[in-house]
Length: 114
Image: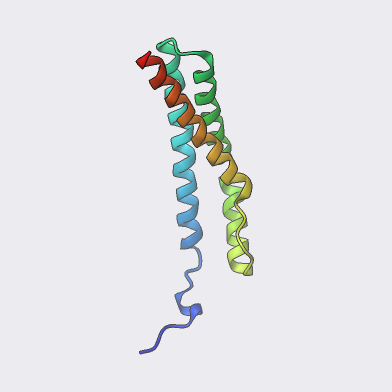
């Protein structure tokens, strides 16, 4: 048996479905984690900057979640049309949210050790 042609290996939707689910997990974690961390920061009297960066992370997660359907449709069209995928704006929003969580955590830890 030789290797199967690419057409036989093609799966008509699961790649983009798995990608969509990964983006949804990322968005939900940013949104809920950011909200939870902002609440903890408020209750513990952290500086407003820490609450703001956690809230920004939550906003980024919410924005990614809202964009999920449009992103899924773009991915499907690109895969079936043989075009390259473009996640540029979504990747930037995800990185911004992640960096906000890291910055907020650093402020949280720094305020507890001083």
